[in-house]
Structure formats: C-alpha cells, structure tokens
Amino acid sequence: MTVTITPTKLKGTIIPPPSKSQAHRLLIAAALAQGESVIHNVALSKDIVATMNCLEELGASFSRKGSTVTVTGMGANAMSPMRRMAYPHLDCGESGSTLRFLIPIALAVRGGGIFTGAGRLMERPLEPYFEIFREKGIFYEQKDGTLTVQGMLEPGVYQLPGNVSSQFFTGLLFALPLLSGPSAIIPTTELESEGYIRMTLQAMAQFGVEMAATMSLPPQYHPFGNQTYTPTEATVEADWSQAGFWYAAQNLGNQVDIINMNPDSSQGDRVIVEHYVNLIKPGEVTIDVSGCPDLVPPLAAMGAVRQGRTRLCNAARLRMKESDRLSAVTDVLCKLGAQVTEGPDFLQIEGQNSLPGGVTVDAHNDHRIAMMAAIAATACEKPVTITGAQCVSKSYPNFWEDYVNLGGVMERTYAMTLEPITLDNWRQAVFLTTDPKRENPLDQEWLCSNAFSMLQAIYEPDCQCRLIRADGKAVGFVMFEAWEEKGGEPLLCRYMIDVDCQGRGYGAQALPLVLEEMYRVYGRRAIYLTVEQANEKAVRMYEKFGFRFTGEMDCDEAVYLLPAPEN
Image (tube, rainbow, N blue to C red; front, side, top):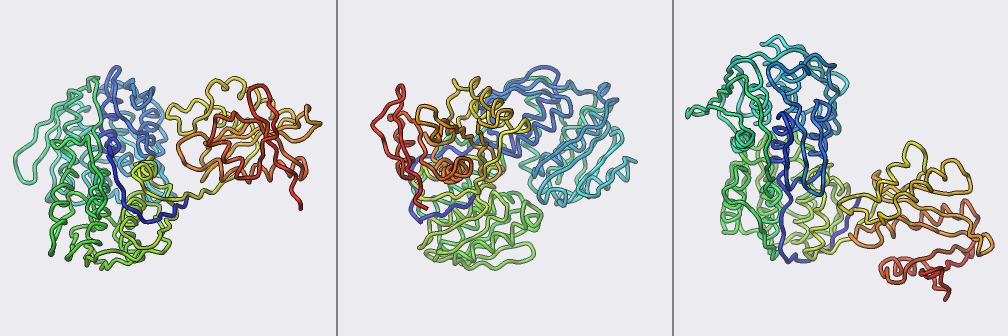
C-alpha cells in the first residue's frame, strides 16, 4: 500500500493499541499453564498472530471473541509427555520476540523445534543462545533461513550478555522454571532494556511462577524448578511504545490527547513522557536509548522539528531490527528535509521549524519507520508519499484508521488483484463475511448462500466469481452473471467489499479491475447492478464510475446501468 499525506494538523483523542510486548508474555504464560486462561484487550497484529500460531504448534489452543482470547494451556511441566512428540515447525513471521522467546520454551517443552521466519528475522543475532547451546551440548543448525534446535535444557547456570537483547533473558525466564531443579541466569554485562525483563517477571507472577532476583548490579535471576503456570484472567495494557508516536505528534504541534495509559506500567517505554518533556524545551538534549530502542523513530521525529540539537546514543542494536533502523530513520527524515547525522551507534539531529516534504519515502518494510514518516508529515510544507505503508500491520494494524480519525488527510493506493475462486481459496472469500472485527463489513447473513455460490462457481463455468486481494490480502469477492431478465446482459450481482464503512478505499480501487474482467468474459457490453439506495457510500462510488439509476427496482433494490464503452 502507498499512502499520500496532505500535511494538516491532527486533533482529537487517541487510545493507543494494546501492548504487543505485554500480549506476547501473557499469551505465552497462559499457553504454558494447565487449564483455561482469559486474556482481554489483545490486538491481533502480525507479531501476535505469529506467537499464537507457534504456541498452537507447541500444544496450546486459542479461541477469540472480539479482543478477548481464551487460551487452553498445554500444561507444561518437568515431566511433560510432549517431549516425546515430533519436533514442532514454528514459523515466527517477522517477529524477533516470537523467535527468541520460544527457542528455550521449545527445548523445555518439546526437546527442540524447527524455526523459520520472514524478512530479516533469521538474520537477527542469536549468538547468545548459540554460546549456551555449545556449552550445554544442545544441537543447533542454522542454514537456508531455518534454525533447528534439539536437546534438553537442564537446570544450571546460564550466562548471557546484557547488552544484546532482553529477549534472550525472557525466553530463559519462561522456560527454566519448568525444569526439574533450580537455575540461575547471570548477566555478564550491564543490562539494557531491563524494563522488558520486569514486564516478563510481572507476567510470570500473574500466572503463579516465582522468581528470586538479587539486588546486585546487574541483577541475577534464580528461577526455582518444578514450577507450573496457573491459569488466570488478565488484561493487556495500552502500548507505551506506540503511544510514543502520538507524543511525537503532540511535540510537532498536533492537538492529540492520549488517554487510557497506565503511568505505573512495567513497560519501560513509559519513559517517553520524560523525553517528551525534555524535547519540548529548546537547547541541546542527549538521550541514552539503550533501554528504549523502540522509541528512537518517534524521538527522532521530535528532534527534527524543535529548537536545538538532539542526540540519540547507544543505539547500535537498531541496525538489526526489521530494517537497519538507524539508517532508515536517517534516510526518511533527510528526504523530508531534516538535518540528521548518522553514526555507528547514534543519531544527531539539528532541529528546525518545519520540513519541506514534497517527496516519496520508503517505509523500509519497518512498521515504526512508516509511522514516524506519517507523524513527521504533519510538520511538512508539501505532501508526503509513503510506499510500503501496509507494514504497520506488524504492530499497529489500525494506525492509518486512527490517523484519519484524528483528521489526517491521506489517500491510499493498493496493489489490487483478482483471482478465480478455486478449492484452494474459496474459504478465504466466504469467511470474509464472518470477520468479527468487521474489517471487511460484509453481510454476514449471506454466509451460507455465498459459500454455495462460490462452490457452484468452481464447477459451473457460467457462474463467475473472483477473489479480490489488496497487497496480497483477501479483502472481498465479486460474483457476476448473465441477467436473464435483461436478455442476458451482464449483471454485477454481488460485490462484497468495503464500500460501506472503514474508509480503506478497497472498493473504488478494485472496481475498474472488476469491470475489465466482466468485459473480458462478456465483451464490452452494458453492465447492470442492483443496490440499496440507502447505502449512500456504495451509490456514490458506482455513480462515480458512470452507473446511472434506470428508474427500475428489483425487489427493494434500485437497478443501475453502466452503458457499453464507446471503444
């Protein structure tokens, strides 16, 4: 998806999405428990879906109603019979948290696993685990984008560098209490991102797992063995990492009121409030981001439009995120007209009153870069186009909807495709009608008839049905046929796509493809359709493409006609 933003100031109230970091942890703890847990306020970003899919492979199961997920845990313990099962295949998508959290868990629960991923995931550092595996005699092999680990975790001492990623600590913290005896996790360097470890310990405590910690610097962790996770009910807080982008919007002169945040949260990124206050003031500001690396994009956007120099230091780890995030931040902000100097582990930004804009920037397949560019666009003088903007779905699927609801002016362009309905894809089309989040607001009462019609279309050539995709994602379907009442003229009989609400623009961008497909099948003839006149958005869309009301009604729907093209 490509979005083009016309600079305007945002105004309104925003509730940031549920914390992805906390949701990972609560779902994992629930999956390890024996029995049923209920987790409220879960947003199904791509990373969370990857974690849930992997946990299902490990032996848990999930059911979902709205934003509430009911988890039936696998009952992991020191004597788990699942260790005798085949090694699970765990596709972690692009989620570094999923991969690093679940490697030790798979060893403890199943004696190993086969891990794959997408994008840059399998290039991201895993050496801290590999050092442990070599020491403990655990087999591992990484080649062709696949990591295989085999062996049994044993109680003992585990040493990890504290300056690589807290995710390695979290994986071991979850797994070691399941073993038959006590263990120790000892950082060999000062801990970075310790707030994320506190979040892990809090989640474990909610599920009844005890963890002793020393008061040393850095602290050491001593998980007791033979523990089991106890099912419970928990709620995911709003995400301070994502709130950072709306604080950046405030800093850039937008009137955005951020609500429903827990000021006492264990999320380390709540430090954004302190940094926001410091960056409002003029002058030079230096921020050590080693404990809050995910805040670098919104902090950089703040630094680009202020009075003074901003220096973000101790940020080397950002080079191994979804993108080389130091390079990506520099590339995007400089193209917008900011003054950014990139160093090996820092960014130095010279603030200014506004940014020229008027350019196209690439999101670098990085959700945080796309959101940074969108917020920075509010301080630009000319429109900004962002390519690859769909990547926000990794952590904040509704970001663009929230942006528009705050008054953002933007136009979306998708890579739209049609494909014939086959046995391989018909379920994707049918189940669009049962989307509980109403991302594709289709008529759920038509589910059975749609399923029958699509199966009929597979086997009967006269029944034409196509699946509609936007950027590869199934978003709707279309059925058309010869209308006997009109002498065999083509009838666009069902156009099941987002033309009623949500504002994603799928319908208008797919309709030209639909019409061309009908011309290909029937020749370049007149085309009919029927629509409820009360559906004003759909009527306006069809009229924009040249459909005109004939004055006739078909039951309670108006009949519209698109004349045959002249050439």
